[in-house]
Image (cartoon, rainbow, N blue to C red; front, side):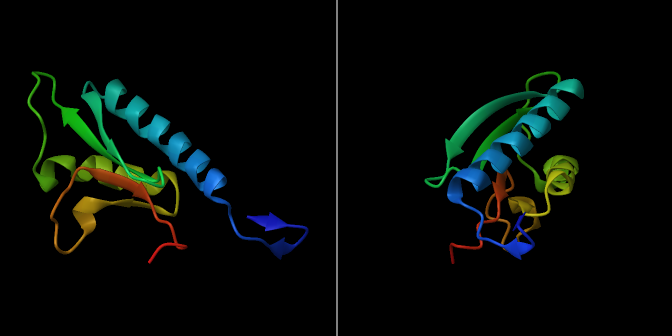
Length: 104
C-alpha cells in the first residue's frame, strides 16, 4: 500500500482485514461449487486458518491433490496468500494463510 507516493508498513489490522476478505471469497467459492466448509483453528495473529472442506456426500478432503484447486484459487485472490499444500514438507494441506512478512 502506498501513502502519498511513499510506502508505509501495512498494519496487522489491515493484514487481518485482507485475510478476512480473502477467506470470505474462498468460502463463497467453495459453497458455490457444492462443497461444505467448517472452520478449524485460527492462528494467533489471525492470518491463517485450518479449513475443513467436505465434498457433496460429506467426505472430509485431506489429500493435497484434492485440495489443490482451492489452494490455487486462494493464492490468486491476494498476492500474499499462501496455501500449505505448496509447502515442500506438506505436513498439512488444509491451512490457508496470508503471508506475514513481519514474522520470521
